[in-house]
Image (tube, rainbow, N blue to C red; front, side, top):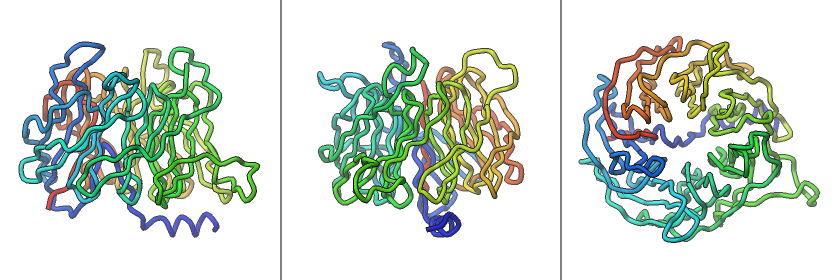
Length: 400
């Protein structure tokens, strides 16, 4: 299948977003769920767990609904297709005496925004830091940072979590940063649009890995290039420059272009899909000001619903960088960089209509809202709209 045909075939597919948007009928009314750290470096942050808000897409007004559920270190959230259930990773290193974190399932009360805990299981690796759904919505995929592995969990019809159907350890050559790349560190995982692969950003390996995903069994596997009948697309991994430290990844709607955010060097590497079923690097661009010499860790990356703009966050420079996406070749052009309105912007989310961008500033404990210019992608700060201890993840749920 040639690349042009593939792009046309995939453009109609809806890509799920985690710590961003849970899609439903767009009435302009939403819940905003906020994941937090309840414990920061062994100290109580003051957070109780997951918080909920009502968000008016027309006015941009955010109204607090208080604590939605008490749980430990719910650092990343994902709302299930259909909007009935929410899943959180519990980012800890020890879970009931084992070297693992947790994964917790909640039922969503669509009238009050409160969450009722349904289940809790071990994440099968320490410090789980990302959670997403496969394209069928029957499985959750979890990246365990310190454990260096990824796991798949089948979901039951009542929202509870079954035993892991697959656990796979990342492997490969480590990057040169001895402090941060001492081992494999799975930092992000999502299924491909056709549900045939699971892509994994591994910060320790300077690679975006691609595992075969069997959606009937919920299993991940590696393919040996020498195996009879093996195709290049079955075992590829995209390799980034040494010391990049890929954290999160964003894809164009047709998956023709992949954008890998480097946490360690604060860059975006652009990859283009080719007819062999692999991604090749075509550009690397910095998210920092020229001459910046301080410490910075890039945190989040997201593409505007229009597909025209890409945003990243900088922890250290404490800014949001804006890029325009070239529609033909997928390359990026820097547009602007704006202060995040707080310290350590760990995560941000774009509302389903693409008119607002909300930033979670972890260290200052505030959420700041920006208006998005639909023509240029530029951001205008609307100021602080909420205070919540140690916010690290924002996810919208559209209401009927």
